[in-house]
Image (cartoon, one colour):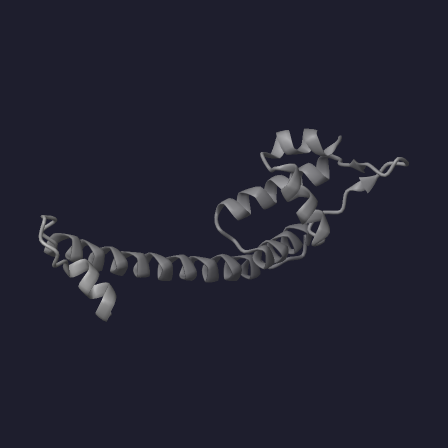
Length: 128
């Protein structure tokens, strides 16, 4: 199967598939003419990567998850550790976003939004 078909089946752009090949996440076969040739296993790996990236896993996390997925002797604890670390990162980002939202919400509420030049939003940005 060619890269266009694989892109259609996985929902990944061809550019991303080529990038994943470049960094060694997937290694398609090459036909005599040099074109990439993908089989079901490649499609399955790429779909796996698409789902993992969709959950926000980093490329390196994806590399680790893919290696564990391919290792039938893996310990599920190793998979869990990667997912748990990623979850902690997400929770940290959410906490930061909630803090940012609260601050911005307070600033918006404090600003009269009228024709006067004084603005607590600009003052806060100026002074920190």
